Image (cartoon, rainbow, N blue to C red; front, side, top):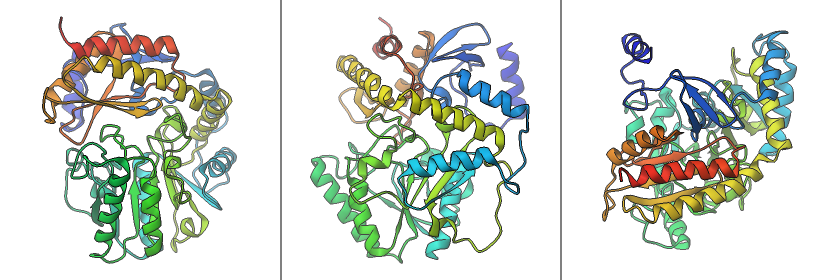
Length: 428
């Protein structure tokens, strides 16, 4: 049955629509931290639909909220007052840390970043954007144009002029050998030099932890140091929190809070986990920025009642059960367990991350040369062992991405780590 579905998939969907695994997987249902495929195999899910299943599969509170809302009304658009949308916006505005915040809902992280770019360029009257090397911000025309990862950038055409800044990857590039203090100083000097050679940009957009890039991040405080320079030039800071938001990093609710010395960002974008699988994205911005548009704009499906009901139920569960604290505790145990296992595997270049956002970068032993074949082999072996993980990385997709639901238990973390250790070691 899966082979038949694969043939049908290939006959009607684009060739560039990627599928994991030599024998692609059809997931039919899930519960908690586990999913099942069409052959009845059960897997521990350490990727959560690309970080979207944030709390748990088939979470009863979310399922109930969606079902009850579907029995009343599913959708009406933003042309009408929408109580669930207002209620979720109020919660997110308060949690964002941005003063006098306004919230606009979209259906995805791509659309959220697209909106943030439109707001920034309109507010600043500039089409120049600063972005980070190794970054990823979505698949729309404008977000592809600012993505600093060749593997996810199918065209060089763009409505924006994009200038790329150092700092998103700590252990590669010209500043990798410096200590954290000097690394930040060198990146700031690079930014200052760049700003001296261009017209004033509209904004810097940056992921606090680069998601598709392989869960890489700079030293804490880098974006705070950038912010001081940007503020002198009137340049906005957009924090792309599509993957880092909602407490996944454990230490902070938002990724930008690791860089908070100079205050919150001017805008933050969010998506993925807040809907627990439902299509929710959005932008939070200071009122003067959000309100700068001088033409009509609506969202047909952004903020629709059924997704907002899911988001409210999911956010309530997250906060009431302190899943951020769980991500910190269980994630800390998991990353140490993986580092201990990786110390015995020459192909592991680095284990990095925080909370339940962990990357394992593979390289050919004794070198810094990326090894995407090894990453694919580990992905396959982990599946054979009953574990689903992801891949990423700006250096030939050689990083394994680990991002389980935030309700992951200690025993499940240990189980997943054991499977992954066997997969990393390869055939015995």
